[in-house]
Image: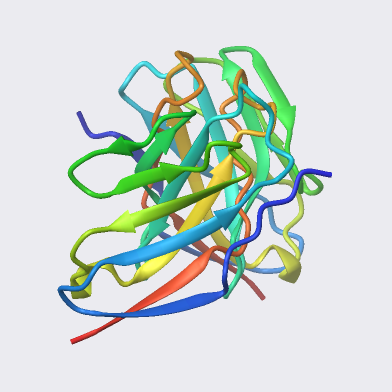
Length: 114
Length: 112
């Protein structure tokens, strides 16, 4: 299993541009999440999904859209990039079993908005 | 409001045990306590989790207080590779969503 994969690893955008961060998992996990991590800070939840077709907002959803058309993929869209969205973005997944199940994280996408 | 508190930083010597404390006084009876760590420039990785009983795995041990208002992550012999930020994350009612709410965590430094 490849686990959780994210593309691209690095991205530079200009203010106002849009883009999609890709996330895929091959573990057949129902739950997937997107987090952002600003320098020196902990992770903050952006959006999450409990299954295909079901998404919900986390702590900091503004400026981001998500969709979940398949179990495997959970893309994060930046609608109009702003410098405040400069951050490292992590995708994660886990099964829908008992609440103690392990969550697996991808390697991250480092985004800079100029 | 649910609140988790951890020391901002701790230091340890290599080969010695490390006890990382966490207070979670508003935890409910069904909230699991998760610990994750984040090595420099990497995504978080799972360390251990538990509900009521003490737990052991190959990475660490988790000691949970009888009243469940606090827990301690124990690294039995710290290595340089254990230098990381350690996050204590109770579910706080999010067990059916997969949500993890990260705080600031404890930055562990390991001295050779």
